[in-house]
Length: 494
Image (cartoon, rainbow, N blue to C red):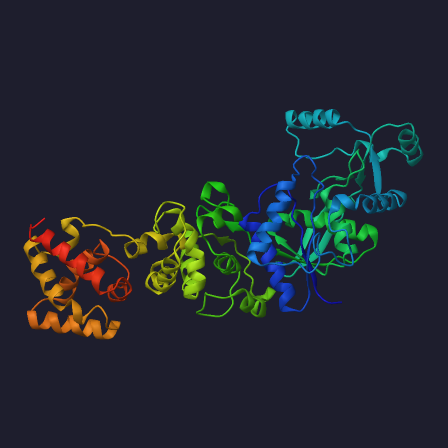
């Protein structure tokens, strides 16, 4: 049988980066072995279900480029892929366990269960969970009460005094005492709706899932699931419980650490390929000495053998670095398209919200190589390149003056540059730099000092994208006008 894995989120909240990591590892495992990646909605928690979260799931996976082979939208041989549409299947399977004597009806009310729990707490009992009161009801009596209309849930009979063993591809052989498993968990609720455990196991079997890859927080549920598989007489899939994603404080990643949902990362300006690249390294390693990968490269490199057992720490600064690296892989046209919305919003082309003219759009794209090496987020480009689209005005005196220099020094240096401007503006970077070096040498000045007031005059700041390329984009007339105005300012003529 070919590899079949699934991502089965519960649509009760926004897509979290931990869920993205689970989806990604399942996706990569399927792609690395020519298998199928299935999306299934586990919407049995109707109290917290919201269609908004379903749409968020769709949007998040589409934005990330993780397209399922089978699922609610793409269909497949095991449709439907939404658990609320499969309720009849779960009731049939639960009835099968009841007929075998492996499950029983529980007539306890929620109030009675709460009272039993409080009594245990007052007695400081070590026992937790359901007290199995209804487990001893005879089958005929149970059937009679159900036929009379008495409400009930259906519970699984956990085999007592035994242990459950299973193998985890990452953690190895695991043995769990059944006495430590959730005591006789509910399989069907009183409204006939399944619980997570029943629906999860039935669907994984019927959909022929070969490997279950999920976070280690689900490890404690696995003995229960294995017991269910055996009760049905089914072979369990292979399990692989992925390392947890933690915050810098060693606790499970949550909102207190910063952004955690895909929407938040998207709004902050992270690229989907950067987020996927970083998340793919949370608990895994690929090639020694290499960190930056495309999704297609990860598809060819992924292996369970490359996963780590230890928890992974989410480092926001490292994610910023990855974002910058993937920005640098963009062509000028691709990067311009990413940076344009923020540039329009900041009004660098005119009024806020106003789009660029054809000439401004061409200039913006041509300027991308100037800013690319200095960007961590697309939204930063507008501020860094604004001087190309509007006059930056005169900078503060401090911006013109080189270290340990004076205003008079800045004026003298800028005067030298103005006189040589015609030999610099239209040349390529190498020749322009050679001309400036020659000017610095002939005048006995340091190259850095010589360029400081010129940079401030042209860009409005002593720190800017590459100056010579900027001057070529602005053109000789604009550069000369800005330089002469700054020189008059430094010489006190205005």
